[in-house]
Image (tube, rainbow over all chains, first blue to last red; front, top):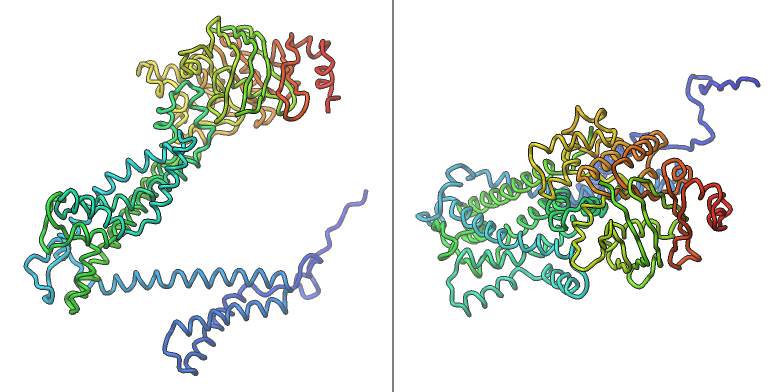
Length: 359
Length: 258
């Protein structure tokens, strides 16, 4: 047996020779250079053609980027790699197209909203402030939104989670199919229809007055299917082996669900609930129909009109003067912050409760 | 502690499909009985009928008699929850509860059944972990999650969890098929110790394992795919592996089978 010697892979100039498995490759930095180049050319074309909109400049640059990287890769690397580059650059471009509006929305809201956003703004109502005067605040609307969303969650979360448990753990046959069907139908209900339903039932037929509670009922109708759907998906993810392990220990089914299945899925369930809350916190139509609105602080959700953040934003913007615009943006900022805080709390709970790994 | 199981005329179904047909056998107390046979012949299904886990599967249905020291598991008014407290089960894949620590996993059976004294709990946990030969490996990290253990340790954790509720019978469904030879050896040694206290039934695809651990061996077979599985013969392990009375058993054991 002779020992195999490994041939030194360096060429004459110390440069590594290309192995038989290596093909021609664009240098690693090429995507960045192509991106910068097409951005520059895109801006150049935009300037030269006198296009006003920066969006048009960006789109030209994006098309250039995709085209140039595809063409370059075809000539240097060959067809398959070129398709790979095409897909990669398409993903990046579409990612940016999705992120840019989101970032600009947050930027605009923070920039314009921070003009009047302050402790004063958060703790005062519009009670004695005319629409075209500066000052005033959003306190009454925050109270209203918190109470309406809270009441809606109190109705929708237990019903939704229990429905999902029924569907995943117990539901067989026709009833389960019917429930699934109606949950699907409910998912598609436009918010104004949910509002009209409660309006006709609660206010026109039963003759109750406008109130936060009426709004909360409509919001809970919108929230319920979202809670059911997300909880259902999370419960389905719990491996059957865990249920069987628990049942085989002689644990009754209801305790198995309560102590094994739900804790395993709790992270995902909370996230789903928070998404549902975020969805209804921004609803305007049912609130307009059922809660009406008031510039005064009303802390009783069961009696009379209440403020709410989405409607406040709409009204302030509609008032058509600078003070109103400022307040609308600041309220939008408050609404986004509220939902963001909720999401962070949900993430925290999910992280804290998630099945633990590691030694 | 250990109890005898008498099965007679047992059939099990998945919906309209009959999975096992007309099985009768006796499982002796304080012994290890191994079930061998080709995949799909109904060994696991049969094992699951012995503690009423079969009916947990949608469409699962059983008829026939399973007597535990004379009491019919399928008699009217028998609560499957009580049956499962008496007849424990260890599964093919280790399945510790992911939300619970090692300690909580072992204590789960008692805690979830609500039938324990607080002062005794940690004694039971220690005793069960010692019983499963896991105590020395985990005693310093009882509060760490059970899913952080190795596969073999997880399986022994599951055995500890099963014996913590003090069952009469322990059913094991291919407990070593996901484990390496060393962990397998640990579990086999454990089975040898556990049979002093429990009646053990083990399903295995590993014939050497059946020969090593069991006192009696049952061979299951099915005549064709889609046909129900049947018990071919049940005898002392030594006899099954040296001089079985049915030709099919000999063919299967010597590897001549399909």
